[in-house]
Length: 191
Picture 1 (spheres, helix red, strand yellow):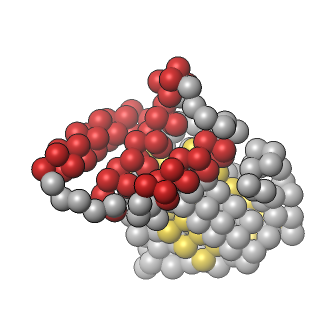
Picture 2: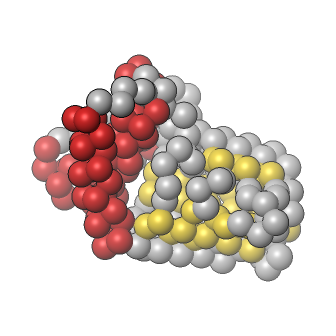
Picture 3: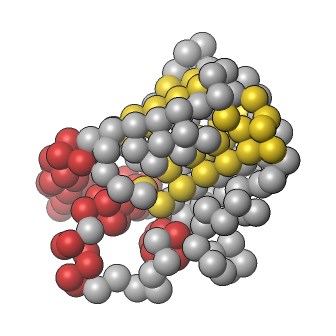
């Protein structure tokens, strides 16, 4: 969670590394909508969590939430604040729905038509997780670290570390981790 300026900068750095970028240019910021949404989301997390309740900060938060909500609606995102850890990569726009109570670790790569929902509890997702297009995760479950979730999978039970899962309902289809499947940019996890 972003609590101060240092953690805010760290999140931005890890998020850009997830896209394979060292820094973002002015043109990329306005050209790539997913990055613009994500950077505004991180800014909102920082402004909300870092304290300070003066009127200017509240106005800034209010305006930034309106602007980012409009972009989220256009992109099809329903992603609340303080859910994802550093290193989030939203591959491209499309419907992504995440429950506000869910917790996702570092270095998550998420594709469109994905839902992380609430059904008698919400998922807790570990680090270095790849969530394929159309995956549905729900219930009081725990997804381990280094897990690759295949396209259109329905995950409703706990998943151990270092596996690839797929199917309806999801089951282990390989003991290869998300790091072995090459779903993250080169040298991203080593940083």
